[in-house]
Length: 454
Image (cartoon, rainbow, N blue to C red; front, side, top):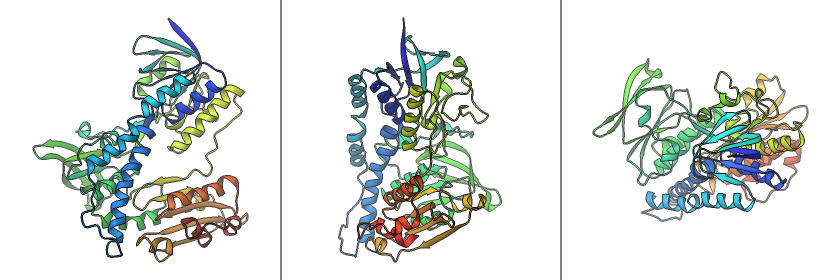
């Protein structure tokens, strides 16, 4: 028997939740299907549980910095099993809560892998067939293939967040968000951490000057960062794992690193391969990304839309998934009249301290030929850093010379993960530098430094 819906959503993360709830509120018949527990990456396997572990590491760092400055805590340390148990107090209830929310809104929820069996139809693992006027792909992302022998021996970010015990020696392969954040967590929990990054620096999406300042914190906690280093294979040994790599900086010299655990931190790609997209005539480009128009709609099958990491149109961030879902629903209900707007979306890497950015980078502004003024400074002597005994605090802010509009802001240091939102607000809604400078922010807070950054 075939069931018909106005919308089928494949996935159950942020984009799926937002889209399904909005369509149901509009009186449409909606189904959601996911072969994994309901909740998606951010709530179950990414942002939220990671930030809970970061909180534990942050406390340890606070104690370390404030020791001999009035704080005495000789045995402060992370009890890893207890920290994971605390994390599960959040992640554990999520799937059931999601299921109740779907039921309360009259949304049919299926625990099954969906595969296209026609332009408007999917088949589920259990044999059911569902048809819909529209289908939304909100499947998120998965770890990218690594292409070297032994890659199956690496654990993913999801498995790291479920470790019952933290091994002594950890190697992270890659140099983006996952490598930077997990290394700070693991090192402050007592592990010896090595990062092997093929590129010339970590955190390529962030300002290179600020990343350079942040590297002091990696060294401070003993994280061994090896850039321009290509991993060529991983082997299982009696003592754990042996990672074989080649360091470009040393003339291509081979090296080996012993580890008890090797973590995949080398990027993620849209999770689309299991959907049998060809069964619906949904086309992908040469990179494997969906071919979408400006309305987040498949160019080859107008019944199909995509949002979030599956769409790969905006930054791979949770707020973008929510934004995309709203755009898709409006286009389904109103006709294709709405386009996503990714202006002023802040990015944060939750290292300790965090590094953030929004808007144009210095390089992008120069490539566009813009005339801008720029303030950039490392300011550990400012009160915001001094009261926390933090040695890394700095900024780079770009302002258009002609309009006085803020066009880019890049910060590293305490509280910048909150402060960057004010710069994002300025960029998205056209506030000038003068608007920000004449705003009276609460003092002393991180935001009260904004006037001095402009």
